Length: 343
Image (cartoon, rainbow, N blue to C red; front, side, top):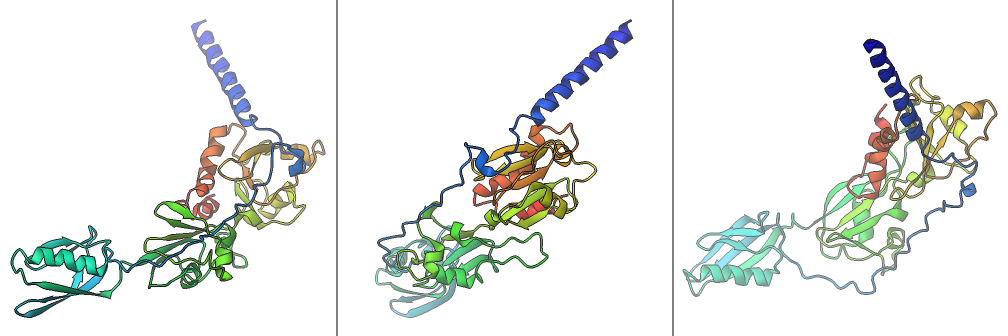
């Protein structure tokens, strides 16, 4: 009797798990036949960049990584080539020790060095020149041909910076991983804040947008997911597909090899809208094939995620989509590509 009771309890717990899994899997609304059928969904409005009315030039300042040549003049003249401004912004000067010069103009740095030297020689004068401006760099990240750190000479502008990085990347024919760069969504970040400039207008030479680049700026070019349908999860060949008006769910699943043996035909998720606040729907492929439901027309930028078997929970989907949703943050530059690579 005790064993029967134990088995009954286990069976009841199993049924409860089934119920909870079913609720988790179906907590999202069914996918609308066409995107406009959901009154709560609205395509994101484009952000209008107003540009900068004033873009004054900056004085040349010493930055960590710069190499300088110091000449001291007193009873005799001495040259010290190859001095490096360290990560703390200090330059090591004989007798004066470590002198903070980072962020100072050459004139200000010379005065700081003279102050240090005059503890030993009150007539000492200092002269600095930058021989290698290795600290004057900006970063270009994301979907560009040559991402990385780029030297910033005086007068460099945003269009020049993008050109030095080779411009936005273009998706190669047959390459399902590397996504094309989207200049409309590219952003210039300075001191942790977005500079309100449009990169396409900068390329056209608009002076309010083609602003001067500062050392430490970051130009981020995101992958152009808004012109794609991204299919991931339990399909034969996860990959992005080019969007075209009228493209349907069954078509993109067929073009990516169909639902795999571990995929759930009753719970295909569709993530739609801006990734900061996405809407998630569910679709039942079995009903579509049986004619019990209408095929779903997809919207540009949709992410189709085929979940695992019927016991998959909502948390599984969210965990799989986390790298994609994190594209809202500039740190997740290649998250889409990484997600597509995973089986």
